[in-house]
Image 1: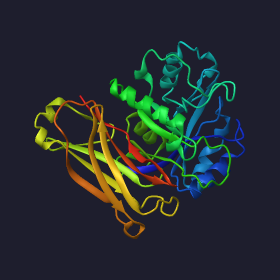
Image 2 (image 1 turned 60 degrees about the horizontal axis):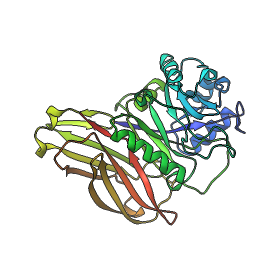
Image 3 (image 1 turned 90 degrees about the vertical axis):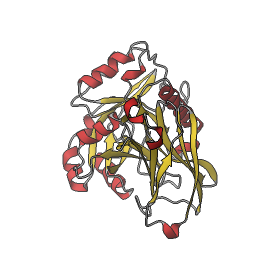
Image 4 (image 1 turned 120 degrees about the vertical axis):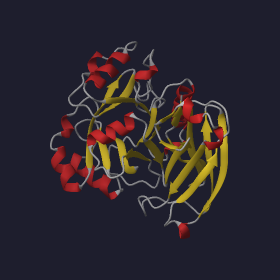
Length: 338
């Protein structure tokens, strides 16, 4: 798997941002991103000239739009053309999501628990979702230093609840980037996985998110694979019952790559806590000691035995101290089980 560093929630002067698309591209490259999604509010006009800018700066720019309504914001990515947000109905948002799908795009809840009326009308998700299976992803981390924010903790819990209910929904981060302003707060990155040897394209990245090949971090790249009956299952893939009959062969492999975006994030030397968790609760808890002196090689943990018994999903989380606070540093999307 080849991992592509992405920022999936940005704005320009075509909505409420104070930056041009070129300024956004320059800032993204300086921060080590390989791809961004332009998701202006209720318009796709800011995408004009994107191919030229993308080529000039060696950056993929995914077409998108943030549906901005009184009842919630919904980020849409990968559309072939404009999907009319004005038909969104509080009890029939599924129709809007299906319209996005019809145009080849995917749809995700943006910052679903950010404070709403009267401070920021419409930011809080109030749409009635009768069928969660149509939702492609949830933006569980929004803003800078996302993992310590209460609204993001609620979004992360919502995602976990839906996984426990059996829905296979991806999770992402999004800065909601409006301006070229420097910050000392940690920035989140969503890494999307494409097949090794493939050149990244807009279509490949959108499909990766659709299929759950995603991992989120404020620093090192965290990845997870499951080995069952001689087969390898990476993020977003499904382990079938036949492949779990021999529980002795069910193992996990975790890699923590501290070399990504070198120099663009900072963590103090410390002992991290690596957790493997599922709908059955916490399954493994491992201490990982790290220092900047040995940051040139990934930490690889293989052959981790998994407890027997049925499960719906399994993900990895890396916990540690970030700017003096205990927080999630990185988490993967799940590997699923039938």
